[in-house]
Image (tube, rainbow, N blue to C red):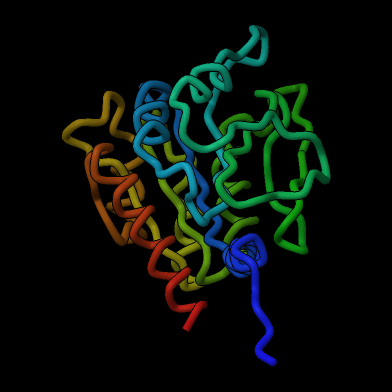
Length: 215
């Protein structure tokens, strides 16, 4: 007698397979990056086989509407993170401005670093990128967008050394090119792309990794 497998069982197995060791995509930005981030999220596939994490410089003194803006894209789910929350594929996570989002040592839970006195405000992207490099290694993807100063350069370097993929926004279109330019000069950018190209590359990286795991 030949056992039959229901379509529901097949779907559950496929979902379980996709959930094992997904890409971890960290997106950092500052001045001039808010609407760029929104455009990038809008073009991501809703079933993206990747965890997406955001570190965007924002004022500590005012409510941030960035989560609502990202939800308008209606693609991946957007969650305002709490400490130690489990991280899932096809979900984007963002913290309060005064709590810097990083990844815990197990690689699949959030770790928030409070910064109420703004002592590390200009290090939040590096902190996220470094934690993703340490926990995800070759599964890490770091994306650095428009912004002032150099936050993100060291973190991208950590991702590159860990075997991950690094992407920076093309300085010719960045409203404030300091951050992507710093990464390019430091030699830690694998790809220099317009913000319209970034989501296509991320989707391709996620799909390629998923295909390799399923072989």
